[in-house]
Image 1: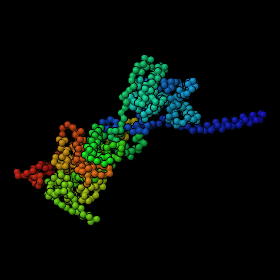
Image 2 (image 1 turned 120 degrees about the vertical axis):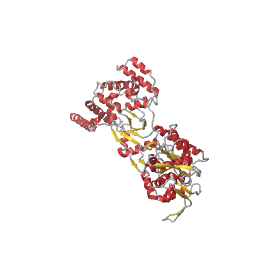
Image 3 (image 1 turned 90 degrees about the horizontal axis):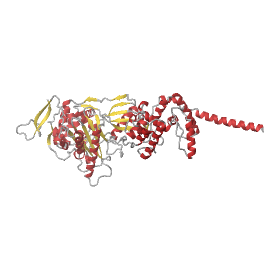
Image 4 (image 1 turned 30 degrees about the vertical axis):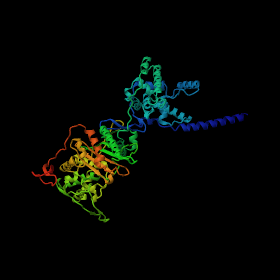
Length: 637
């Protein structure tokens, strides 16, 4: 009997040793609590417009870390009162609180109160998964004691208040304060502090957005707890309970400039990585002008609606469009609309789409001609011409839009009325290489084919490329690479990058002015005449491709440069007669009218070395008393 008892006791001891050893081996592999000293929680990055307003927030966990001294004392007290009233007296694990919770739960026959301290909750959210096992609870307890030994109570509370989840994607009290209260956490009242303190227990149930009545009841309970703990008086609690729930919540971002935002993200990700953008708390200052962006979006959507209303049976595919607005003085992208709806299509037609620009490419050819010594009064032949491809032996006969021939015409007349045949002849005179070289200097990076049809804009380019080329004309020959970021700061406010626009002189000022003066003529008496209603100096050019599949309208004033494109993604026709002037022109005019409004007009500066002479508009010769149509033309001195 004694032997049998001994063997049973020995077996139990061995089993206990095995179990204890297994448990010990599993709980000894714990995270290092010193990680808290270098812990960098995921923070919100923000994209700002040129005036500092927030355009978009980027995050995986929406969090903004704040130092302990910016968290008001009444918020700390509210959290302690409702979550862990003995926080400053226990050593991490509150055995008295555990016993009290156990008794209340037994009496209620359900879980009505927890016994976890703030330190335990911090240990759980930082280092462990939500699983509810004995081993995990043991690990949590050991790690909690280690945290309490290494850090002060204020440090632990600060970690906790910046880490906890408060619903609506908000982590930490600063982000929650902005979301629910519309203010910095340092500015909240006692009532607002109690509201925030009540949320972590059940962020879904106590959300003031989703369940305001439940949130109010929870807030009042927290205020009662603050009275019990001696943090506030009953009178103060009553005044706080009388306050209505706040309605000055933070606005939601994302609708202002989604295509612009995506371009910023792509650019920054190449340098810093997407993880840094979505977790690093960066502040990205950009060139976006919120007012211009809003006007551009409105102009595009209304313009597209007007075009579609002109067709009895419009295609089922949505008509698309894009708008770019640049500051010619530095290349800053002030507005970017890449389509009618980012939610429906993330394809950015302002940057990613390559389409034939049609006659909108012609100013590049004329600028190359002026640079090589041509004058606006030079004559070009508008007569039939044939070309034969040297490789395929196929013939090509360019035609004007109206099918007519006008004989000798000036460069000005040919550009103002967008004549194809004289432009093809001019390209032949100037040569492919000078034109393509100039186009590349103007910022057109898309490949250009050295064929006579280049004069008709058959080589595909993006709207941003072509608009940047026109911006060079507006900037008196200086090319500024389009950009949308000015400065980047880290989460501590340290400057990481400061961008200076890349610039280079690619045209002399006289050539730039001459092409501008010609394009002003397009507005006054040519294909861009719709822009004359702006009642200010504005240089414009239209572009229309075969079958009316692409419509362009690009132009500039001394203050801004804007490009508009309209078309279908599948390249079907926009509709009969939907030229650049008719389809894209009204969008351009609405945009500039909205941006410039009733501001006094400004004039393009005339550089030294330019003279004006009265000439015969038809022959380009000096005007006489008998000249029927006299114009004042600009020339190199």
